[in-house]
Amino acid sequence: MPRRILALAALFTCLSSAQEFRSTLTGKVTDPSGAVVPNVQVIATKTDTNSRFQTVTNSDGLYTIPFLLPGTYELSAEAAGFKKYVQSGIQIGSDTRVAQDVVLSIGASTESISVTADAAQLESVTASAGQVITTREVESLPVNGRAPMDLAVLGYGVVNTGTRDQNRPFENSGFSTFAMGGAPTGANAAPLDGVPNVGTLGEASTRISFSPPVDSVVDVKVEAFNVDASYGGFGGGTVEVTTKGGTNQLHGSASEFNQ
Image 1 (spheres, rainbow, N blue to C red):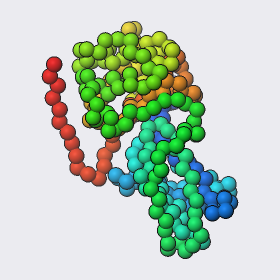
Image 2 (image 1 turned 30 degrees about the vertical axis):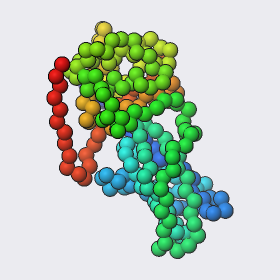
Image 3 (image 1 turned 45 degrees about the vertical axis):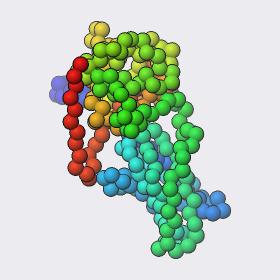
């Protein structure tokens, strides 16, 4: 019995140490006069897989849809006495809180209003400061050694503290040498899909454990100043790499490294 308890405790410790790489979509639903609309069915659909995530607004007209994988989403909202609201092209990155308010128009539910997502607005949901190296940038920018972690040096508040002339895909020392937020090299969190990805033995404590191939990466999120409590224990910033999942399209890639 003691062994079982010890094993469970170790499991829960590992789970609690992981950071969340999925994101949250939240907002308020109102009518044309600005009054809140409760009990509205809100659905977020990931366009490349048709995965649906739904919820209902509360008495204050607020909705929250957590645990969304990075990607492009379509948001719809339906309520009796109002036209169906459909907004496409909502881009959701890794570990973000996206605020998207909805204004319903009075009319029959059989009618609908389609909206194209506006340009990204000022971040107003969280106090963390950072930026995202997008999928397009990860795929298009020349990356020494095909190591997406090396793209962290593009973020503001990040200082290159090493030499990046001989990086190779199977090594991790070269692209681990950067400092963030005024902290020394190696004082940064580096989760991979929410799982801690930093070595813990001797000199390896300052090194990234694994850097996936660039073809398998959705984005690289760099936060020089992260105030989220889930990232406690690190004096620097956070470099979070999120890998791709499956889609409804058959796809693949091949690469060769020669140095």
